[in-house]
Length: 222
Image (cartoon, rainbow, N blue to C red; front, side, top):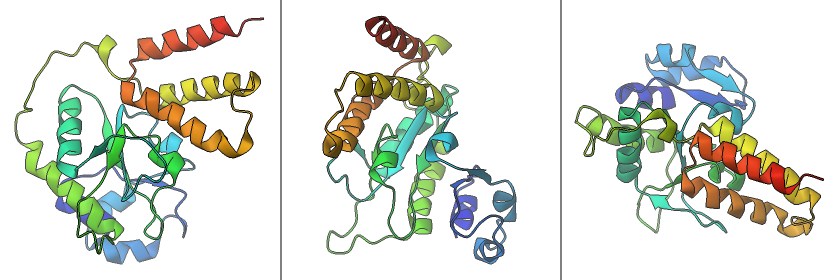
């Protein structure tokens, strides 16, 4: 059903993280209703971080933010942001979670912001393919239009890829663990996510990531 929704909206880059029933999955072919090309070209990954490593702009689809502090975007606003970035040569994507439970907090924290569909507050249940279709429709609706703002964006100002951001986070967390800053075990997950959110909102460039890693290395030299 997700592949069918993507085909409806002229989207083709499907990435799956640890598919529950394995891959390829014959049951998905019937549900795709002819969108076999998308299924056949789907890429399989073992982690969310790996799946988005080459992207610069990522939104996380979720119905609630729990204990997190993150900017919240409607599908239309998120698509406008992605459309402008893609017009500048960047790569963008949206994370969707499991049908049953959605994205976990760690995955939501990987996004530039949270993408939330406004629905009847008394009934917010939305299945996965419907969520993909809502976002995909907004993309299709805008994709043929000229970006609202067309700016010259030199490559040295491009946001860093997620693989560079992830490497920076891992470096920072190692050193924070080493100095005891994250020493309270029950608070560690929330502290790590909040620290990640601070830097995600900044949209670091590759040069900024290198500078920050250099600062960390300089501060931690024996």
